[in-house]
Image 1 (cartoon, one colour):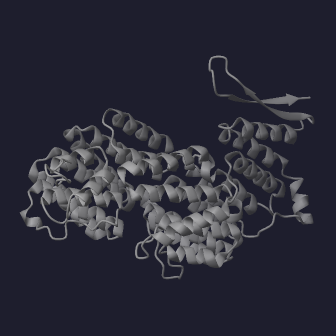
Image 2: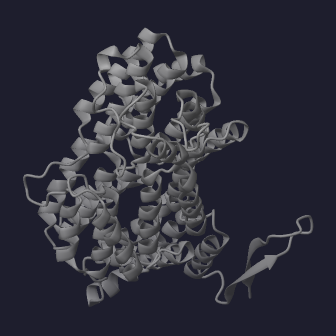
Image 3: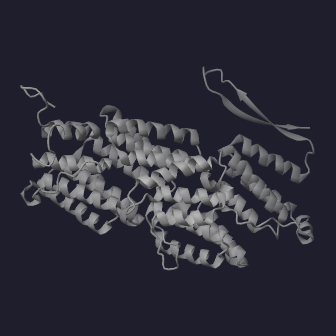
Length: 523
């Protein structure tokens, strides 16, 4: 900004604004534009850039300055940015067809302008929308073109955003190591050329990854960092994502009243025509855990999820996970046929996304419905399919798998059922997860009759084999691994006096921090 010689602020120039945009300092750009005069007047290029910043931040308090712009009079580069901005706006409003059309136009005009950096960003915003809406095969084909455009642009910012987008894609597929790796690359690029908006995106991704790994303290740390950064980047979208994550973490950790207040507050502030699906889903899960099925239904409907038979699944990331909350709601109501029919329709709609954890949970919930319908062979096949999608290795759903399978085998193998559900409790306790058991239980009790007790005496070998196999899945945690080895020894009759000791040793070569060790004491 420049001072006017007679006092006051002069109008911001395009170059001033562009410098702020390249640093991701959208808050200062938007505030200065408002203070320096009517943002709906003046340089059309500056107004397009301002509209772009407003759309990326989600700042609905500032009217879009492009309503009176004659797009036909814009140079191809500015027209590309205008079309990209309109595409982003349509995507956030849920109009996929309009968004797709504008984003394609953004790419086309960037090519016409022969502007490599503009083309890279047009492609990147196109890719980011596609990640939420398109099947994996289409994304992989598109990714090749985007990489080529970003390489030709040769800027740290566009390269960083490409890695952030790929991190999002890998995270949604359940590939958390890859998602983290791409976040790390993006962060290293931003060290040389800081950009507050890009860093906010990376931190949102890191909070999601930490949550999926059940590292809740780390997830909360990232949430706080995201919110602090919004003072610079002005992104209300980032702030909203962080607040929803905070409410979801509160739910997982059992702070149900706090989670309910947080999530209800978020939904009260969002547009009723375009509600926050993630917040509505998390709130519905709170009510599932408390057993309030009426409020659960209302929360799902508030998020735009129809509960009648005519409802069709939505394959977008947040929406497809909410479709599983609807399935849990049906299971809680003991509408097992309806739950299975719904899961089959979700499976058909989302199979092309190849979301590892999501597909695993579909099969697990379908197995639960089939068990209640006494369709044993189909139930067993669904459990095998859940296992093939890696459900036993996915930290956030590992406990759910053992608990649900324990419920399924309750009559045929009561000893194994108890063992599985005790393992689920240990996993949840080690992770800090409190509410999931209440959310997924449908009131089915483990077998306690004479037939169940008689069968229990015939199954020690199955229990032993299951215990040995699970030890490999739990090797990431010395405490959980020790508990499984303890059970193996007890079932095999090798020792009647075994205990587990946890040691916290200070490493000699590290001044701070602790090393976790487990020791089996045999006597």
